[in-house]
Image (cartoon, rainbow over all chains, first blue to last red):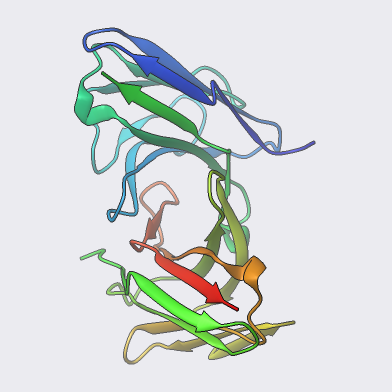
Length: 112
Length: 112
């Protein structure tokens, strides 16, 4: 089915470990985004890619890096995980303005 | 500023109408959106309204936009238990990577 696919769905990391969250969309959207969701804080933008070949920092980029591998794929990397990065991470893409974002189903990350 | 505010909780009885409110601060917003998030899932677009409209109706959903007061509301008629979820409003501001800014979300609880 068309949409945004995120992997993995769940992950537990030890402090200091690294990992990459994968995101792919098959809707030919230009723009892709990574958000984190924490209780009572809504969604906060980590990084985004307005088009293939460009990436920009969002509201909370510290501790993260991203790669826009091609038009379909946008990955988020945690180089040295910290407990403060325990969160639910959502990838989204955007095509036509009126349709807003299409979201993936999320990755629940716990850092111990 | 780009703060979008919502009340955190709303409780209604099944069959009543629910009204979820949102205040945004950027008068240049082009589109405003309502998303629904069920437990353990990603955000799903419910409806949107273009900034030159005052009202939009879609089956049980009615969106009202007051641009003067920067106030957006979502009315759900005949609320059902399946409507229990977190509802997010979001605004789209021209330029800057086509981003959306989200409110903190309103938890709607529907009681029998």
